[in-house]
Image 1 (cartoon, rainbow, N blue to C red):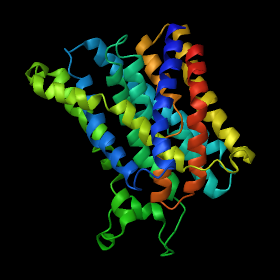
Image 2 (tube, rainbow, N blue to C red):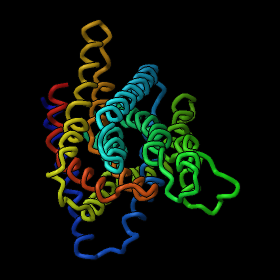
Image 3 (tube, rainbow, N blue to C red):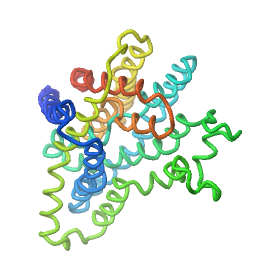
Length: 341
């Protein structure tokens, strides 16, 4: 119960941190590119610093084994969410179906999940941030493979007779100037070269090899200062995006309610059920592994859904409503799911 109250308290703090972003955007105090620039700073600088520092600890076989458990369960979570989303929204209108599937499968495990894990669990369960980075490696693998496929498969936006997915899945020599192809080509490679993945892989070397003590204190202190910006700046970015999102018609859409039920309750509770089932047959997961997995699985829809919709000519207005309502609901749903765990 103490952990649940801690989650409620810190989720509330994270939501308060969104308010400056909403104010800045609503009162036109920032330029249109400010949110993107801030997002890039968090994604490419601050978050990798946080992830790398999470690995600067003495080697522990327990942490390594727990990391493998998180990797396994992150694959289980994304696979389960993918199958359910594809089946449930199979008959929804195509434009909505793509974004409903995307928002159901992909949670805000990076921008909201990692800061929350760091604040709530790291002191109690050292290594929790490391586990969160492992979960996000799987997230990125699914995002740049299945996510791209959901947004593009079966579409021919430029009417050239070639399925969009075939165009974005690899860089074609005669399409080098096509931004859509450039930005989405080499999907799996993009996942591997994602800043969080690179930081985790480099950090893993320092964790496994006896070299973490050779990192200069000046570097560690600098990275620590960058790390401390992840939570507030991530929330400001989400606030800026929420300010741009429209709630118009959100609550008259039956698919919205199905999506919210799946994203916030049914699917996270399925993960809780799998974990409890393993306990019953004598394969109880370490508490930190179960907690990290469920927290990240129960975070709201990924804000990257809007960016993917814009990148691949999907319904960005519709998915923005999904993300906005999902983000607001998570302040209630996440503690409830953790209470059941």
